[in-house]
Structure formats: C-alpha cells, structure tokens
Length: 271
Image (cartoon, rainbow, N blue to C red; front, top):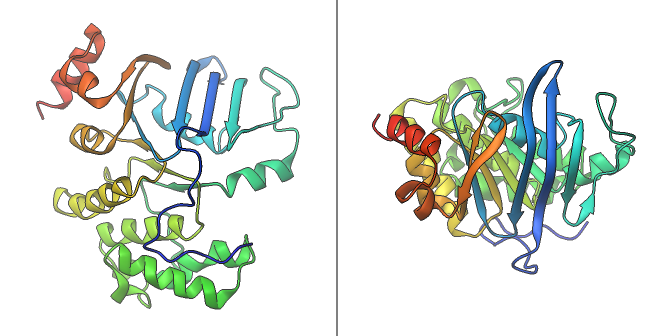
C-alpha cells in the first residue's frame, strides 16, 4: 500500500463526477416487512449526500446496505466503479465473492450512532487497530497518522485515555478519527449526533462540517435538518422505503414539491 497522506491532506484526486457509491433498484425486506422498495442513490466523489426521513423510513438500512452490513434481495450496488457480484436474487441472495466484499469495504468507513469504541483499548489503539490488523500497514506510520487525526478532530490530548474517560462528543470524534485512519473513499455517518446532548452535538457537527469543506465523499443519515442543509450537496427524502423526493438542499428545504416532505419539514424544523 502506498504511503499514508498527512491528516490534513485531501482525499486522493480523482475525476470529480465519478460515483464512489452507486445503487440502483435496491430492495430490502425482513420477512414480510419491506424496508426498501426500489431505491436509487448516487454519491459522486467529493459530494455529501444526506438521507432524511421519519424513523422507519429505511435510511439506516440503506446506509448499511451500502457497505454490505445488510444484504439486499434485489438491486445493484457499485463501489468505485466495481459492481458487487451476487449469487442469485431474492431471499437467498448473498455476495458471490467474500474476498471482493472485504476489498470493497476498505473503500468505505462507517461512523455509528453509538461510537462502538473498544473499551479495552486506548483511544490511540482504537484508531490504529484496523489499519494495522486489517490493512497490515506499518504501525509506526499508522501511529503518526492516528495522532495527527486525533489532533485534527480536537482530541489530540486524549490519545492515551480510555473511552470511558471521554465525553460522548469526544468518543464520537474519536470514532470519526478511527474511520479517517482507514483512508476511505467515502465516509458513512449513521445519526452521528443523535446520542449526544445538544452541547456535545456541536463538537461533532463542527468536525463533519470541516470534512465537508475538504470535499470528502460522505453519506449522512441525520435527523438534524440544519446539518443536512448546511453540509449536503444532494438530499434524499425517504418515505416508506422509497425516495419520495430528492434534490439540492435549497430545493428540498426551501421549496419542497411533495405534501409528505412539506409535512415532515414542518414537524422537524419547528422543533
């Protein structure tokens, strides 16, 4: 693997409009419950795509299908121009090549709602673990990158602390540094601020805004409409497993076309 860039560098330059993630006609069910009903999504390089909608609309499931944490029953998923190969269609569908899945996943890094830091490791060890053990990168180089990333998200002084010693906002920022240390092509955020008190939310929001300003490719599931409006290039509003409406944030938040989106925004933005 090539030498790691410094933490302040932008992602490797590539054609601006190439899709890092492309999904077409995605269906996902849990038994008789249909969660996704033919969803399309494109995440162009350097763009932020926000997924909004009520709880149960399929946002988090769609995000988890992007990196194959959930297996869809129908539809195409393409990562960095490479389609995922499947064994079949329908309830028994599985990826045909597990090695391909592992390789494609190295292009993506997910930040979860509940941080998911390993409690028996220091913050520095948490950030270093995957690049060293999964990507088999040089530990000294990874440590230098990890320390720089912790400084980047504002917790450089917490490298030797344990997760339990950090606030929720600090833990989430450590989780973001851990994701960045994999040098992913895209970052996937699943409600990154919803488990935090309002004051701590702003610590994480600032980091996400800084990453968006660097033109990082991101897919962001959020109930924070202000965050979605501020950082996204494109917004998808999901309702009952379908994309009810999509477009640039100015259109979605200032001139919604559908009654359902108008109702949703009236309820969420009035809070």
